[in-house]
Image 1 (cartoon, one colour):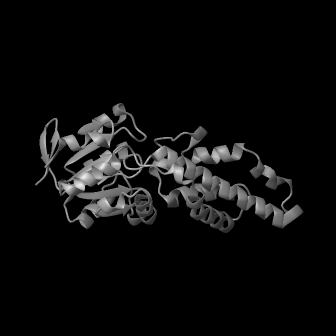
Image 2: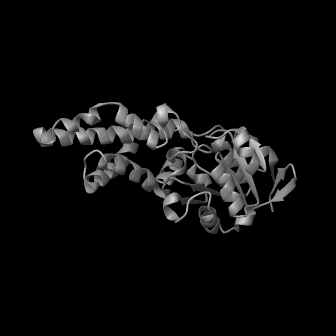
Image 3: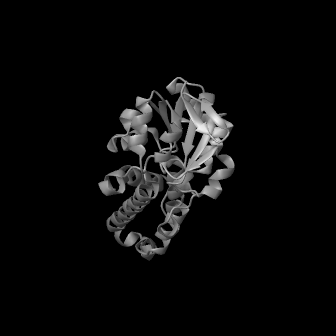
Length: 267
């Protein structure tokens, strides 16, 4: 069985389970652009709605032309002032939860709940097509590390709060998918991180027990998921949303980036 070198000694394991955003994929660049694309879609919807309704909407509808409400919504979605809040929805919420936040925002400003929900669904669905290819980038060393682990016989899984279909699409666009054996998305479990449900699901798909997996994440919720699921080890990386000081209490090891991972692996 392959081993991984920890300060406490060698850890035998069969699989690595990676978080996606902040570990394999550049989080801030992509999800910041995605958030702004979602807001742009909502603003366009409201502008068209105002044009169709004419004077019936009245002056109250002009709120969407101001910047402050959209700044408030961006902050509510976990992207205040153009930066990522590591404790906010952008990092921790599922798409369904973020959509509920945006729907409530529109509902409080005069749309019916059905109008708000449908507008958000449309804007969220179309946002990926609005995000330029340059916004999607892998984290340093991601492809090389996955390829090397794959060649060495490790099972490789991904556990992500992102929706499974979108997560697979992202991995395919970055040419990382060929090295991933299984994935579990936030839309496939009833409880997200730090609960162990996602870890247990991806491990079942990998054909390994959770105690045979090493979890690699950039957030405290990833590492706490590893603990609650009794994973063999929890490794933090600093390419995402958290600092070494934030990750260290829950981690067996904290690495600057994935490229440091291979040196500790055998065979």
